[in-house]
Image (cartoon, rainbow, N blue to C red; front, side, top):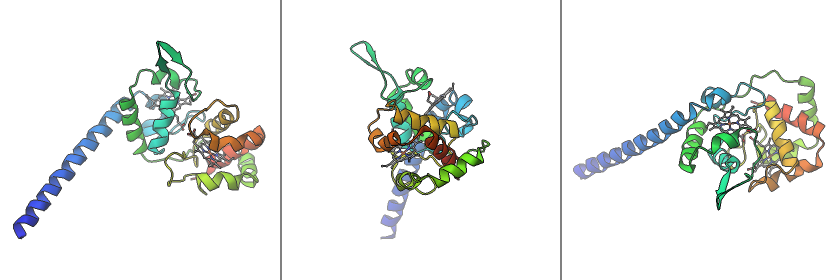
Length: 206
Ligand code: HEC
Ligand code: HEC
């Protein structure tokens, strides 16, 4: 009896150790690929600019989907327009395979989410907080903008302000034709001014 328990414990240990090593390797690969990205997205994905998003601690599914949607695809020798608009990322992502993108999404999502310390416009933050739209946004994104139940809904609480505003304009102007973009259709009914205030408010959250 005791012997079989010991054997069971030992084999469980072996399985756990092997799994840990495999995970560590995947993460290590993601970190290595991510070295290039840190010049813009910051060390471990905590952005320092107000227009380049923080990606460290963002949900893995959202990171992977976003990168696959910005990556140009070639069909019959012709490059198709990516589903999601980007200024720079379309150039970089061309060079990465899906498996490499997955490894980077894995590594970045395992880093801590660092709320931005970028100086915010407090008048805009107050306007965003008073917006009648806010309750609808938080019904999906969570009260602090960091819903953790649905990995396809990005964290936006503490994300950098100009990036959030640009993202809202992209949904409004049909520049993000992603699979779940329809959930963001409501922004078409909201003025740019109010979107800017909402973006600044979500940036201020921790
Ligand atoms: C020269 C600066 C720069 C570099 C280098 C860079 N990025 Fe980006 N990244 C951006 C900008 C700017 C955006 C916003 C989209 C755009 O306009 O390209 C962005 C957007 C993203 C997004 C979307 C995040 C979201 O919240 O939707 C992801 C994911 C991302 N980058 C991952 C990476 C990875 C992984 C690398 C390394 C392979 C990388 N980036 C390298 C500037 C950069
Ligand atoms: C029905 C649920 C739902 C509602 C309501 C909603 N969102 Fe979203 N939001 C999403 C989903 C899902 C995505 C990701 C879509 C995709 O994959 O392109 C998203 C993406 C975003 C992004 C892009 C973040 C990034 O990193 O690129 C921002 C910013 C955003 N939402 C802000 C808002 C604001 C502000 C409101 C209120 C006016 C709002 N959302 C209302 C579900 C919702």
